[in-house]
Amino acid sequence: MDSERVVFLIVGTLIVAVIGQLLVMSGRRYLANAAPTERRSSSSAATLVAVFFHLVTLGILALLAVIPFGGSPGDGLLLRLGILLIALALVFGVMLTLLGRRRQEALATEIETGRGIADEPRVGVRVQSPDGDTHVEPRNDPLDPNAGTAMGRPYQDRSV
Image (tube, rainbow, N blue to C red; front, side, top):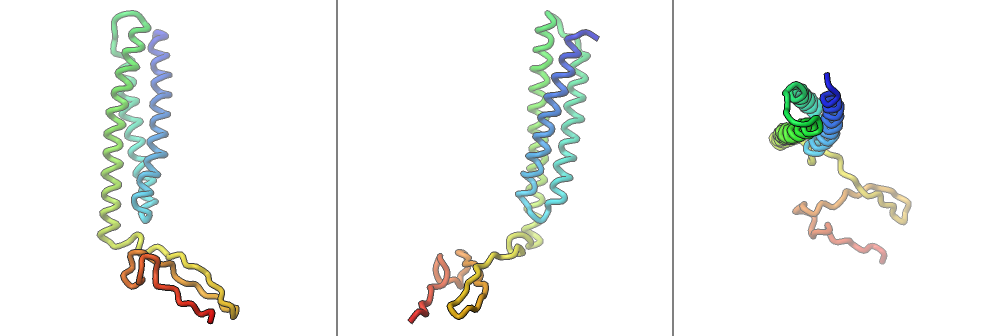
């Protein structure tokens, strides 16, 4: 095996590994932010998509390494790297499409089942009255029709 192919295989493998790890990390965040209740499956879905990406791109890398390109060794290396980068961009786009489809499915499932924001615990405000009694007042929801105003019900002054 000539040195041009060895350099191509090493550089190509490094590029595939780096892009694949970026796909795994960003894919997990992308899917987890879409549907908080589906966090477990989002991690495994992103990992499966990344494995598919690695297998396809490493296969393309191996095929490009054995295809003979004419010209000087430097020209052949650059031509192989160029073709590899274009193939990586195409495969990466397909993987993003798969992740986007999985995200849409997770969002649709959450909407259909009615889970999500309504099931999350609401944060309240701890209020201590001058008598020393402590209670938690619920957070005002600007979209609540019973809130009175956008800032909640009007405050009743009891200081008199």
